[in-house]
Amino acid sequence: MTVERTLAIIKPDAIAKGVAGQIVTRIEEAGFKILAAKLIHMSPEDAAGFYIVHKALPFYRSLCAFMTQGPCLPMVLEGDHAIQRWRELMGATDPAKAAPGTIRKAFAASIEANVVHGSDSPTSAAFEISYFFSSLELCPRSNRGD
Ligand code: GDP
Image 1 (tube, rainbow, N blue to C red):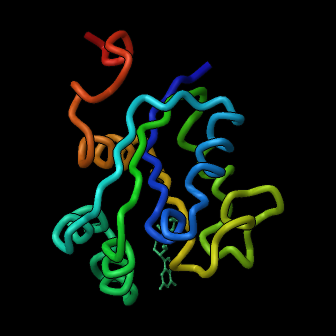
Image 2 (image 1 turned 180 degrees about the vertical axis):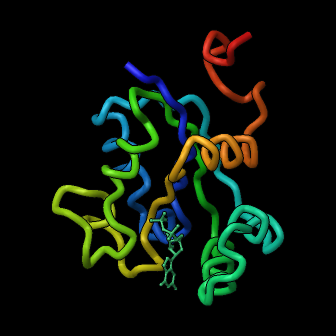
Image 3 (image 1 turned 30 degrees about the horizontal axis):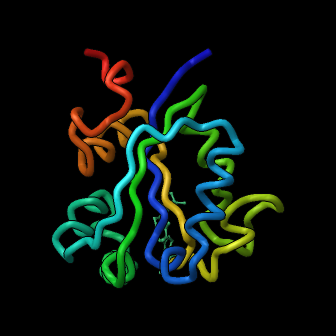
């Protein structure tokens, strides 16, 4: 058993389409523990900082604009091998290539508007969790390591 934490985001397109609840249900049914969650509307600076590793990519500006078009729901998920398992539940970046039963296959409209985000490594999970949440916001208290 390798308990990990990962940063998930229900992206603005999913909130706008009204499928956030269905995505949260899939997360819970897969056995993840939700340690923290909050609805926020990112500024351009917030999105640019979050996706700083993608700064050189051609879709960086478009991605940042997409992520600021409305509120999104960052969450901290915990569970056995949570980083990899959450990425498997999300499905491939491009919904046309996502496996049946995945969240992106069910709800995503395009390679950009793909409804969910998930950390891709322990290093990025640590950066991304602390980008949105302080240790005081991770519940219950016994999970904070204090
Ligand atoms: P992820 O880890 O599956 O989310 O994929 P990446 O880290 O490669 O990309 C981050 C996000 O950028 C994706 O979730 C998409 O929202 C967006 N994205 C990825 N590839 C493309 C692309 O080719 N074009 C555009 N417009 N957006 C993309």
